[in-house]
Length: 307
Image (cartoon, rainbow, N blue to C red; front, side, top):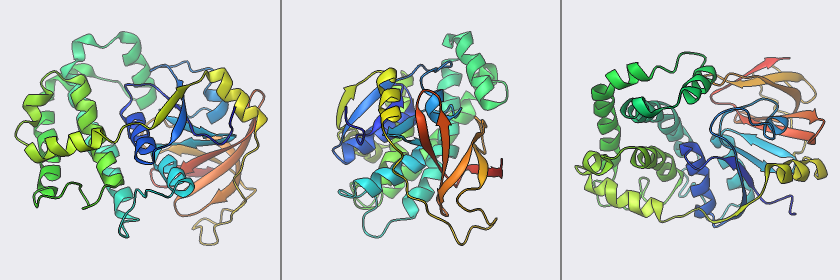
């Protein structure tokens, strides 16, 4: 089995996984899919990540990518054509992702779970409370539906305004910005029965939504989680050593650090720095089942501490 084909560990209902599936489609890639459960435990994924528990996770051989930001950077580097960053837009689409992944997403997720509050299983609530580090309060989400509807409308209206000059794509040409913004429209539509009513005032957005959906997911093949661990165990990490001479804290390859998200799911993954820059950090760790691994994280939205 190929060790250089991307493997996505995901569940189909995940909006962040949908973003990466669309990137696969954008770049017309063939990829392997490993389905994971929506809640813990995930006994065949934790050996790869070292404890990181947000979804999705991407694997290429023995290199493991945590957070969609770093996955997209890696996919753009490995498969540069067609580019997600056309016409010199190499920074803005990533900055826009901080809007779509955080502010817009939190609004969308609160609207979705508030609307479906009475249908959410208790085990899911307990799992997400642990992930957030705070109570997953569906009653509060339900009470906030009117405010969340207002906020969601405001976010979609920005998309509508950006398309107001007749352009087909947010930045003029199809790009990462479209995929990031679409993620929340997709999540709302797949979970709310009144999605058509909510989006009806935004005809340009509806047409744009159809264009993004048509990008598709590339060519997907299902494999087992055991297969994925076996691929990692038989491979070697391909990340070269790279120092960051401008690191504000003087970190360098060989230093032991822990890395964790700064918002939720704050589980630290520890290892030895292999490579770092302003936008990434990669750490080496070892697992009894999966062997030697290098786990990759973005810098924006993550905390790096001495370990």
